[in-house]
Image (cartoon, rainbow, N blue to C red; front, side):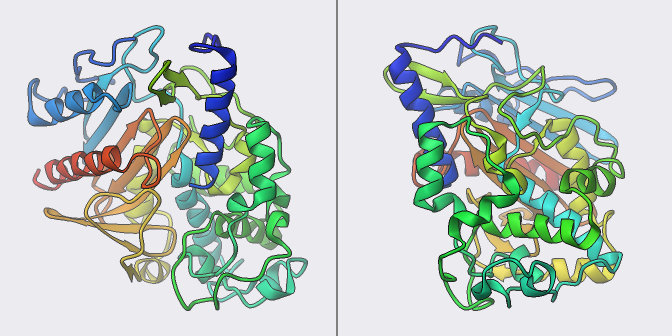
Length: 397
């Protein structure tokens, strides 16, 4: 990939710093929509309303340079795409392109923790004090269950001024991922554990640390053994640096003066780690969400606990329809029915993965710019509408 910045170098660096700060606190753009085909995958009919919606999304002045959506029903896979994977080459997005999955990584830490619960290595009511006695005294009574459903009250390390100062000055700074919670170690809990819902990146760092403490193994090894290998995922990893494996779906920050700024490799994954650092592909994410939402990774007993939902608890960014939070999974109730999954956003990417409760039907939906309530609410609202239409197309099959 060319790493030549668009426009003036100073503006480029400023854009990267802004993108990094935004993330942690939370070519031909009108190219024709092309149905992608991988192996025996079936092409969706050309000219459908879904094609048109994706075309209109990338044609917006604030729209993403590229979008790719994978619908799967049983053994049948349809891949829809619009725009480009890279504004310099103009090539189309592919289901085998790598990309940052952002907070969808939280579902992966949930999968690891829940599999360890099934094996008796952890329990949902285990506390930080019991498993991680070195953490602050104020946190000692927080349970694994509360971390998984974001009712812990842990202050968010990524919103701390110390963390923001470092990553704003050097977005590629390499953090010691296992010490990220030190940024808020002197802070009080935001509220009494279990008393309310509040999304916090600190929760998933603590989950990964508990998994390591319970097993004596690195979190990256647990991901491979407990998630990647059982689901046949061979293109997913949790890096520490800022590089992406080729080929990758380039992510952009849209600067109104200089156009799309490539921020694909702007930020080090070490500052997100278990909360958002995983790199994957639409193909691998399809395998993941079918297994995860479909119950292939956990026992029925654990799944019943996982599927206990908190009404009105939003993922970040919000997904399609009405949202409720379970244990490292969300229920998105649309006008056509419910799907289960997770969303995420980070510089250059916004993600949704969702599947039916039996895992048979699934959707992965990826766009190549960041959307959030605080930086582009209009684009986010339209993305959610398009996502809901794709969910409806999936559920009506």
